[in-house]
Length: 346
Image (cartoon, rainbow, N blue to C red; front, side, top):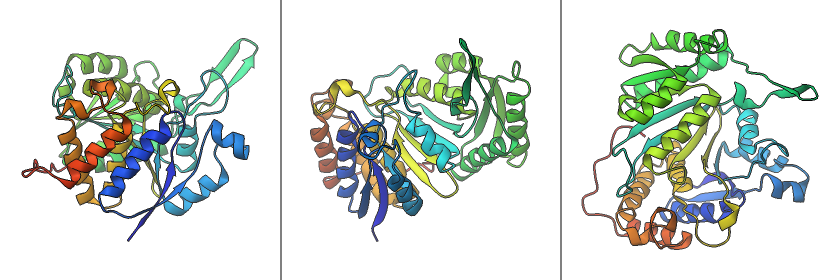
């Protein structure tokens, strides 16, 4: 059976890294029908829409998407494509696993963190207006429905994949109503999962604690803006945004995406590292039930990362985007004789 997937290559380096990831995904032997669409400035030039209706209709039909980076203008221009897609399809759970790759020197080896972020409300949703010239108001909306929904999703994930501990991250000492509601919902849900240790940390203290000792955390449950900031902070533990995957889950749809920028300065030069979008595609394979293909890519990726000459320049190698993809495909075709055992979790 072929999986029909909506593909959003993005802009800047997006088309290069998604093309590399698509080649690797197809080399697993899994069959795909790709429905490819532009979004953002490129789409507006062609269709006079930043998110064409054909793209919306495709995701409504396929229920799954793979997305490269799309440039978001700073301080003006159109709204974030990521935010708009999350709102449109009620992709309420943003999932970011933080794990080291082999032979990438970092301050913290063997990090294993899960960031679970509410994805539809809070300050990050961008509800703001100018009250009078020179005065702008941003509105932070926190609801019991959304806070309960993301809390239950996180605890269900923890139970399914045998995670031991969840910390809800907040600023309820100052924002007693909004953040207070968020942690009350988290506390209520935690009572239904007695096997999972539940804790709460204030967001600024969490940042300090993470930098001092990330191993004290297992899963972090966060509101939208806090999750956006802390997930990027945690990416630094394993080498940066170019290496970490991202996924957005709703009840009906899921979109998997690279979370780094579009890097227009190196676009079209065969320099970009496709690891983040590839690892996002790996999460997509697991979502589609293609566990063997996902592990085939993971083992091949780990093997390639053991050879510096096969890596892209951003992590000390000499390979280009296409050559890196070739190496991963070759490693899949010639697998290690004794691959490491599969852990229980995603």
